[in-house]
Image 1: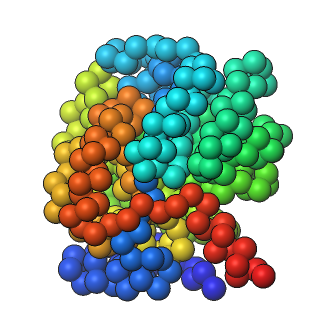
Image 2: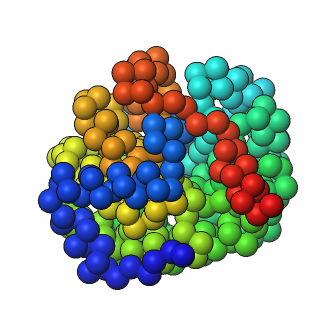
Length: 326
């Protein structure tokens, strides 16, 4: 049974002395997950830039003067080729990101549905992050074979308005509800390093912990400060904050895949090893995460070899669930 955490309990966990915290998180990880198994996901920007939102961290917002060039929606054949490359590189999940405020019922959405069908046909889990979706749109995605929908809450409810004004915190939760109603798995997390307090980090984890069911996937991102965005002068996130956040997420969300997401490029292998010890069991691989740089596939595979990690197979969780239900 999933425990109902209070904010104070989560804060107490977060403030545990670091080595003790890693040790506790590792115990929880061992109980619910296979040690040394890490899911490799590939993230592809299928429509880049020109977004009408004002998310302070995002170089794809049309109102900020960044180096990101606007690209229209990719063709299905091009996405299919990217999926083949991702699979060759050891990925078991392909995530499609479009810089939209919300999904509209038009030819572009039909094209995305075709992309989902195509990638699903290759035996890869497909995740999409396309902005806000209605329940009907989420159902269409599910029918096309979508496995997960990503919609991050970004930060705490209290801190949210300092980061974004064009969409509310409740709008984000409504999208997550629509995704759930459509029978999709939920991927939702946030970003640290945006000038938030420890309480804001806890507030974000608290919101995710009270969702029922809890999200199957929680990405923990370290801000990649991009020139031209309001966050360009934010200092880099210390690796210890990242380890602390992942360990806390692992304890509070025991069954969830905790994804070590943006910010890995500046992390040492030792730092990433601590994140895996603390309960991270998923990474995004490939040269780019939407528009920000990321370690290369071969570097990640070398790290897997050194640390004795193995890539998780696609749909492994579904298989386990089916075995339990039968």
